[in-house]
Structures are given as C-alpha cells and as structure tokens.
Image (tube, rainbow, N blue to C red; front, side, top):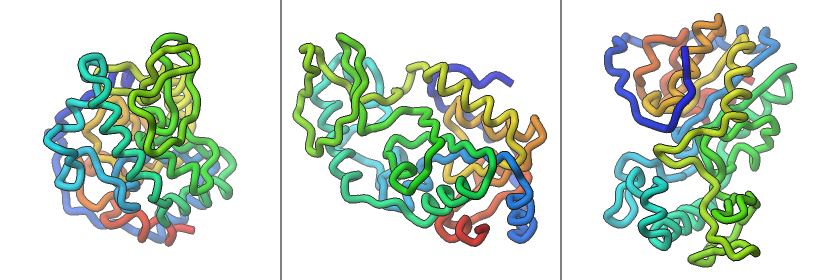
Length: 257
C-alpha cells in the first residue's frame, strides 16, 4: 500500500459502518504487553484543548475557507492575507495548553521500549506535554522557512510581524505543509518504518479522510498491528481497525495507564 504523495482529501465512505463496542480491559492488556507502539493523532485531540479545527463551525475565519488559504498559490497571490490567518492561529494557540490525552500519550512513551508519535497537527502541544519522539507530518506553526535561503527556524512571536522577513532579506512563510505540497520524504520514511514495526497502534482524533495520513492505520493493520481508534464519532476507518473507542481521548487514554 503506497502512502506517498501530497496532502489531499479522500472519500472512504465505501467502508461499511458497524455497531461499535470495545473492551477497555483487553485494549489495556494488549498495550501493556506491546514492546513497539505507534500513535497517530489528528485535529480531534487538539480540539479537546480548544484548538479550532479546519472544518466545522469553530474552524471558520472571516469569510475564507482554510483549505483556500493553506496553499502555495494563496501565499503567492496574497502573502499578507495568509500571514494574517496564521497570526490569528498563533495568537489563539499561544494561550492553549495540552489536555489529558496529550499527557497520557507522553506517559505511554515513557513506559514503552519503542515508541513513535506521528501527528498531523502543527500546534506543538504534544511536545509541550512531554512527548519526545514526534514526527510532525505537516510541520509546525511555530517554525518559519525562508523562501530565499531555505533556512528553517523557530519563531514564537504572537502577534508576528506581517510580513516577516529573514535576515537574508527573503520573505518568510510558515514551515508547514500546505495542500498540494509533498510531505517531507524523511518524515514519511520514518513514519512508515514506525508503522511497519509496531505491534500496537492508536489512531486518535483523526478524520481518516486526509491522505497520506489516512493510509497509515490501514498499513499498520495490514502489517499485523493491533489498531485502536479513539474518536468522538465513527470515521471511515472504524470498519477496518480492531477496536474503536467512542468518546473524548482525554477521558479514554488516561484509563489505559
């Protein structure tokens, strides 16, 4: 199964939904007996901390769709507008803290011999919670990249100067992966390596409709891992994983410790 490519939405509605029940004790026992664990997180885990999601009523910004702003074409056409949106997101994130789900994942990492956290989120909340081995598939909103010299650096200014420039004089852009852009090969290779060797995988708060991340859980299942989904609602992945735990990750994950 190939997962390499640019960020895009996919329609997985052909997966049949099913009545979902789960055995928390069994999941806990399997987790504790696993030597290699991989966790994939999406926007849902950050939403529990109050981070606005891309989609839904809480994800709106002015009269623009985020999918129309998070593209190379949008930045080329109107970099000031795109930076205004990212400044709004940065200022929103600057007061937000990790929730019990972030903290539980960081604690699981301490207890497992081989642990990898793969996240689609760009907010950096996992690191604030104490997670160490983190693969950020879509980059980090607190880093910037120079369009001239290519240097990537951390920048936690909120509000940030619009428009921001590098010391070399080049225009800075958010160091995130936009729709239509390729994910970094190195991050993808590390993510796939973690997926292929893990015995147990959590898929937390991800819609299961954004590729290539949506394929990671299916790949793990194909490779023999026990895959557990944690989400507040059923997703296109629910019919394919071993267990789906419906509810808030901040309520469910701490119980597994």
